[in-house]
Image (cartoon, rainbow, N blue to C red; front, side, top):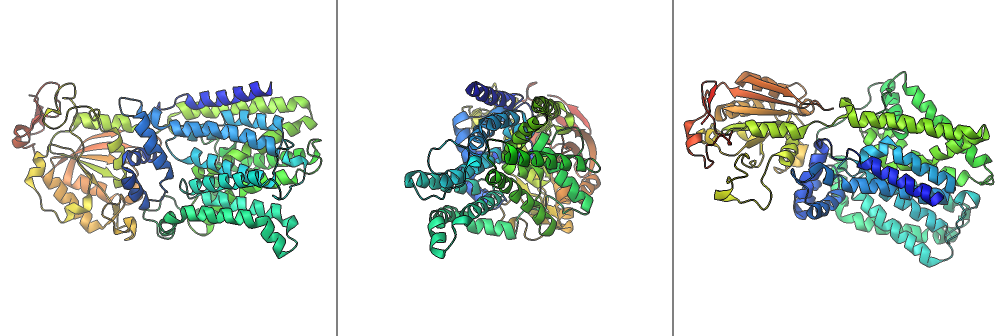
Length: 616
């Protein structure tokens, strides 16, 4: 029956993670994953070296997209999310294995059911990012630590017996260390926050080894293999270590998050994390004051019941402190470090980063539910049903509530492409969001004809491919060029951080991030308006790179707003069209020089006289 229950839990988890997979547009971060995965390996690594994430996940996605061939006409969002889904399901299996070792079969099976419906898990199992991969690698590392200190195949849970030092069965011990080295190195190449996981694991090992540390020789004997494993991880990470060091002390990106201004902000963030562990980010009840204390109290009660389960359950025989220490250190040390560093050093906190450590919380949660049987047996079943109901409410909001919907970049870019004309420029503000255009701009399939035959049917109605993005700062010293008004391909112009720090992008002309002074921005926008008859303003996160709205002011000064289209989504995407006050109509040369047929199916070649289009 337990096998059937486990299979049912994993299949339920798989089904819920599959439901609505790829139903929405990718959001900005996910389009970064797509653009990087499409690059060559050398280009991918070079790009991530100037960013804030390591390249491991993108390399995995690179090989996956070579196999699956996702495209706009072939399940782009659905297929790119599959690696995250599979690692999300793998997490359930790892939780069961760890639960068997640390607690018992009943608690581990219940934990898998809780994880199957947990909205926090399902959210990131459907996102084209590295978080489920990082969480799974962390659980592999924890499993290796447990096996290393619990040599032998004794199925009795760790909570039922004392920890034995790794003194026997060297083959199993070495296999555990090899697993740890591989998973730890892969974790560091996946997410820098994985460092906190490794710190927690090392604290666990020191605590486990402490009873045997009577002399220096015994200390070396107990920790020799473990220390050599840390050296192995370091050697594997060594090629990337200088890059990480520079990214950590001198980030090449603008500040994404602000430090907490008040104590209530801090409490709200802690409560946000607590609510995410329990019911995800989409539960309708707020996590801010005064509701913040509700979720903090809920977590406290869960761990109080967890402690009672370990101390009083007949299966633990009073030695459950080992399990309690292992689980609490693995969960709370990284989380507390993120909060402390955010408060004292630099803003590191975002609720998404807590997911790396969140899966292990399922085990204390399951044990706490089982502990309710001490009061009344039916309380465990009632608590389980209440949790399932609350999780389904949160999932309903995650899938269908517009407040949690990703910005509809697919529709926005498609509509922009349909209305684009030769001589138009696309101003991407903030500039690093150009990955959205590269992901969703319509393009013929790879086998389609190119060059002179590119616009033969059935691809005649598609716009030309995008030009390579240019920096807005390049136009500050660029005199107006009449030929740009005749440009037959979409010009993409990326804004920079207005009056931003000189370290942005480290001065690399290929970086997505760069500073631009207000004076240069003014000259550049004047020249852009003199060169392009129409400017499409693709607005997303522009309050980050331009907090005062200076570029928007320049657009309004140099152009006349023709349309302003907001798109649904949690980040407030807008696409605006400005007609330049310096250029009143599209050059006839732009029409005459086009290689594309002027047919009714080609909406991109409309001659404009004044403000009225004349269709061919």
